[in-house]
Length: 169
Image 1 (tube, rainbow, N blue to C red):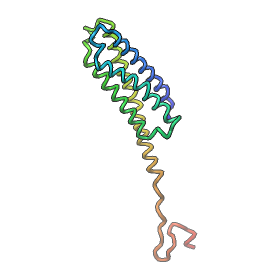
Image 2: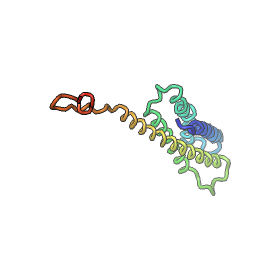
Image 3: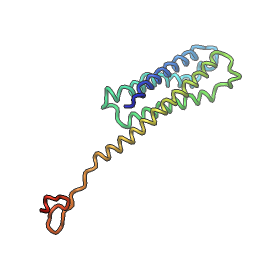
Image 4: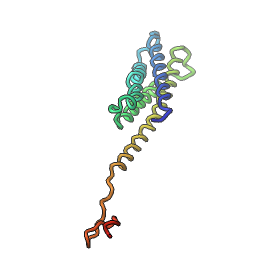
């Protein structure tokens, strides 16, 4: 395992907790239209999914439970989680008003949530790239490891092995 992956997982967990906090603040501010937006709830789901399911699985399964870290499951979990973050921050960025019209605290929290979601997506894009590269390398190594050596060639005239110098004596 790469030495920088575990600190990056901790950073991803911190960003997920920040997302949960920002969305909780947004939901608690009952005075604006964003409090009940489905995009806010989706970002809350992203934070909970990443904190409770993705980070523990991606961080602990390869070390503690190698039987449950299938070579396709890790890149799949990375891809799904990265896709959730990508769709969440883009949907939120498409819905909020322009920065010049954003003059209240709840709107600033939405801007911060977009930045946190984009950074979270970028971290998952990086780890997903290395997970896919690791998948291709492990498949290539397994293919090379399982190939059988070529059988010895026999000399048809006397029935001896052509590659064995002792049988030719």
